[in-house]
Image (cartoon, rainbow, N blue to C red; front, side, top):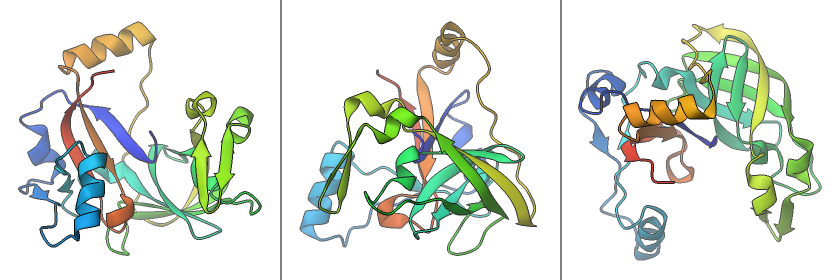
Length: 212
């Protein structure tokens, strides 16, 4: 989290249809992928790539998810959680060791170059310990275990175009209450985001089982 977004499933049979805006979910697996890409997908998705394409225009709660673009032209998934606030991954701003980055635009409901709402990113903030837990090797950045829990950034936003979607509310409660919430959802979660191999469309895993 939060280069992708997780939220609990309270009606696992009904939610996929609602989340797909009333349309049948379409599997994203591509039968024409080369052998190396297939091998990588098998490792990344535990043998089966069962992501689905979220049909546009996105219905709630998927409408609050969008694409963040940084000043250095990197993109990440981010989620609107208040009218002027979004959350994303802190590493989105730390992709290069000697090139500081900042947010530029957040586009909620982004789909193939279009969006439901466009926001200017006014500022971003994340835990100072996160920077100290990064290692750079060549073109790659590695997040050390002690920094992983701080890989969250908050974005201050200003709406500049479009119609603002309903924000996805943050959980308000204790850890015990959150555990109860997960159990009431039968430990099932939905995950959505803009994957590196399909970064112009929103894809999702539906009814994933929380095991740890």
